[in-house]
Length: 183
Image (cartoon, rainbow, N blue to C red; front, side, top):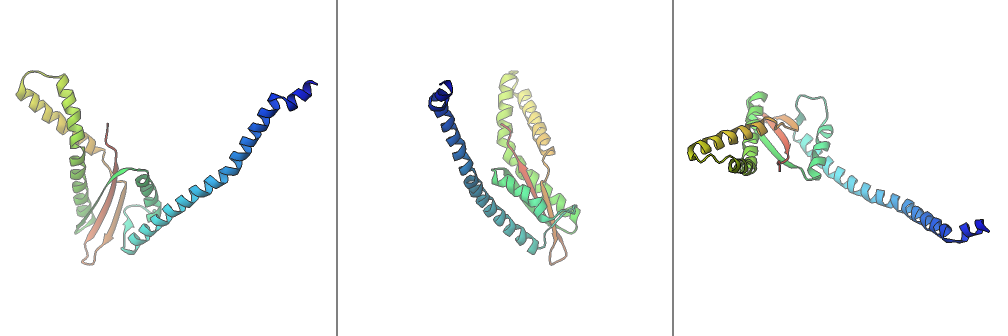
């Protein structure tokens, strides 16, 4: 009789409902995976188009035996996830000149982007260190501001570096940077 209660009673109904829920999840999982894989396929197809365009234009990965696809797919994935980026492209007579120019312009753009966040951070610090001497405070502010910007730029490295030869024999360098503004 006790066994009959377990089958027909409350615990048996819960077990059936639990089983139905598990069955429903198991049936829905392939549909969700298929929908996700369609989005992934569309994304990868778009990335492949961009990579083929770059290959057609003659771009190659600088200083690495990796293919454009190996280097760019993780970069594109970060962009798809909402990463902020700077892409800079410069030409020079040789690779070192072009790379130096590219890095210089990218750092200048990054410095202008982070300027307001560093200023806000510095103003908060200066409120706490109000010495009453305006000249000293201004000099301290400028020195600390410059130090903080230089520190952030020092850690600013290209995620992707591509090179190609132009028709006039020069070298063109494209560098892609990903950054995150500190809160």
